[in-house]
Image 1 (cartoon, rainbow, N blue to C red):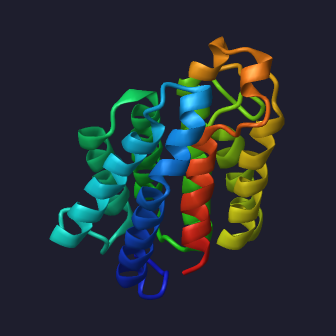
Image 2: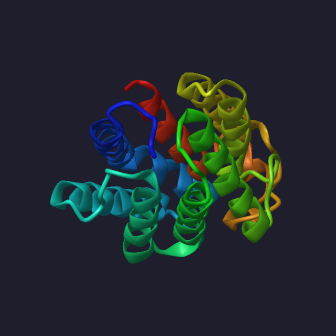
Length: 206
């Protein structure tokens, strides 16, 4: 059973708000990605966010149970987002769903652990970690904080710190930025990490 109070209504509200927040920041993500990437991060994230928003409103991303919800989120991302980020985010949500499917009951602790498992899956299959100048610079500290405290505000703070920190990194170990010079990279944060920070900030304000 799911022991989180009003899970369905809360999850629906949080997901819709997070999708809107991400879509609203398309211009910022595009600005950063035009400098350090292919320039398509903003539109890719907005496309995924719009698909999630549409499916939640239509009921094709059910929120009555997290196992089903995260699997449906993975489907929405798979169908709407291209590129590496889409593949990795789909993988994260599928891992979260499969992790929770093995739990006898699902509370905040199990949700936090599932998030950590999803982030670990991105690191494993994407071949990056903290310091690689990718979305994992926001995701990994956020997951660690969430497991430690079960507090989304703590996770959001760590994601923001991690995303901001990518602007100071002079090299990238993965992703499109891997091919760019130190002069090009310095001063501009990784757009994938910024996108993670935007979503977690929105979720923490619920």
